[in-house]
Length: 266
Image (cartoon, rainbow, N blue to C red):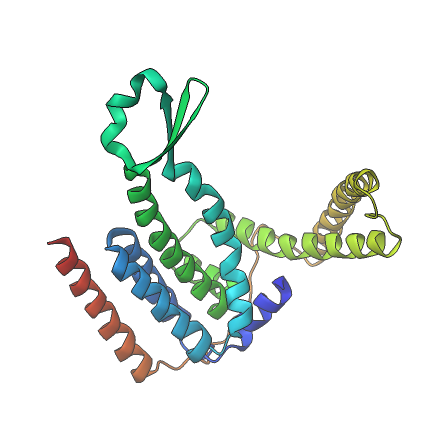
């Protein structure tokens, strides 16, 4: 999937738009999603879904799979926010915070559904959905090297951009190695039982560390053989052509969302 994401960033239908325009658009929506009302945040998530699936041509099934990964972690953490606990002798202090009397006694401890917690959940879920959509828009429509090129133009420290580039490439390499090792172990029934699976997992982690170090040495030698002088330079062409239609739609949409955000806050 990770190689597919990188490939889609180079082949999507919005590839010809200037990356600075797409980054500015996503960052503006990200800021708006952090300060706006829940209804506006859900509108941002829905609007970006149209941009990603319809305009950029990203497969809807792939986008939903990507979106489900952070949402699963979010949903597993929501009960911890919605629930509250207190000693039985202090239950009168939080009586107004118990939602519709939903609570249960466990020994001397009282576990209940909190009104304050439910309110926090109602704020967190749409904000997370909108913010994640903004990040996926950048990930799926702007190649990472172009993002780094923009950071260089903004005078970010060269060491930071080079570390980001190396980390990004090593993530793909690490996942590819892990996938190869897992397929080799699974083909030999290495995960047939729980005990055997734990043993195979330990071997996989050890081999993964060893192969990663070997890969790092190979990259270091290849850079040194090519005269690496402390700065990675990547060639970039500029076949970008701004679109009046997309620019107008982005500006109009952001303006409408800002107006709605101000209206909801009154």
